[in-house]
Image 1 (tube, helix red, strand yellow):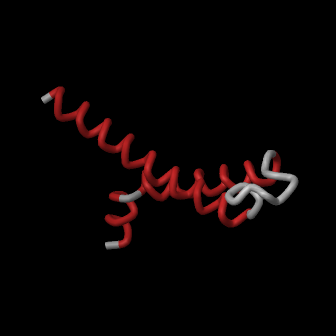
Image 2 (cartoon, helix red, strand yellow):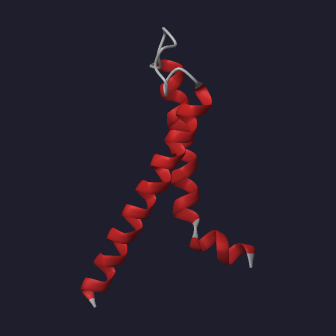
Length: 73
């Protein structure tokens, strides 16, 4: 059962993790040095926004691949 769920949501999981890591790295190396930026000055907010962006991007890519497969049929 867990293997089926993992196979079904693998793209979302991977993109969410990559988005979170990207958000954290953006905070670490670019960020906001003054602390006045509401998103980029706090590491966990930047990580959460990165995860959200990664998850949403995975949905777009999954729909695109699905529509390409259906158009070939």
